Length: 103
Image (cartoon, rainbow, N blue to C red; front, side):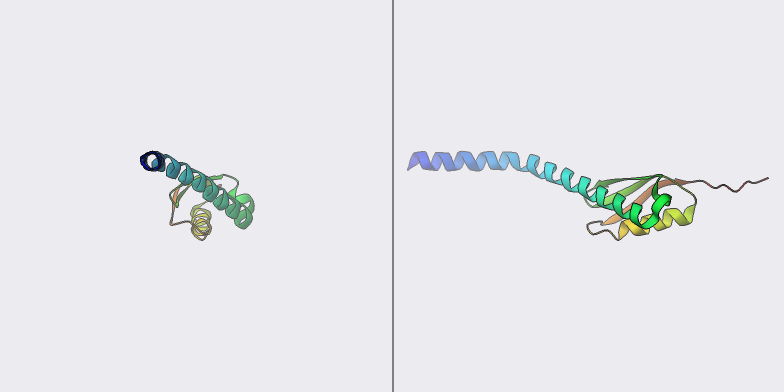
């Protein structure tokens, strides 16, 4: 009986110690999956306008990176990203450029 108890206690201790590492791995995997889903949604919805964009995810918060033609394209990209299931917040560090000249 004591041996069984010791084995159960040891298994519980190992599970408790490994828990944070396993949760971190699961979050990393789901973050990668979410970033991939957002990138696919951007590519499908915006076509070539999404070619200069990349996505990172962290616990359901996604950030768009890269370049767009202007503020309207950046806003569209953020809107499309925010509608992907699993996205809690959509942030942008996108820069915009314009082909208009100020001559």
